[in-house]
Length: 103
Image (tube, rainbow, N blue to C red; front, side, top):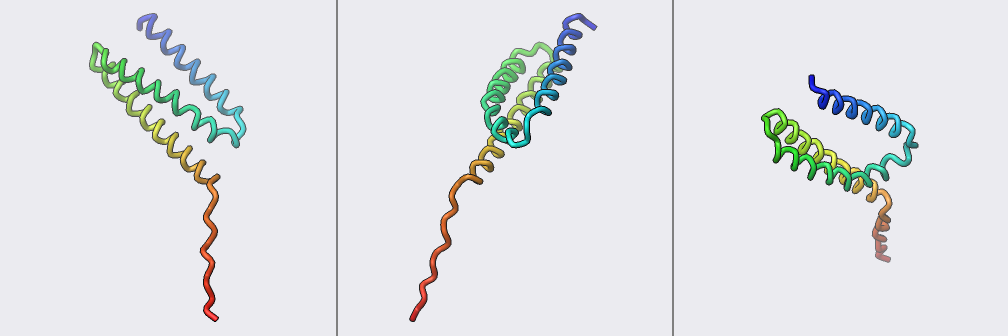
């Protein structure tokens, strides 16, 4: 194993641990607003993944880049769906139509 791979693995596992610890400390009421805010970040992730997949020099890197694009897109679409659903909860509902009584 090369030193570059070990460094990348170390950074990945450290980022995963720190991310998990940070998210687990967020109150439940803030999860949905934070998710809607991260949609823009995942858009940047998709662009980066496309750049990596396009400049890959081996089939393995191409596959990893392609999977990164797919998972990033799933994350963006899911984030927007949750945000849309959250915003639907705050819309005022139309009052039911009044019935006319014939007298």
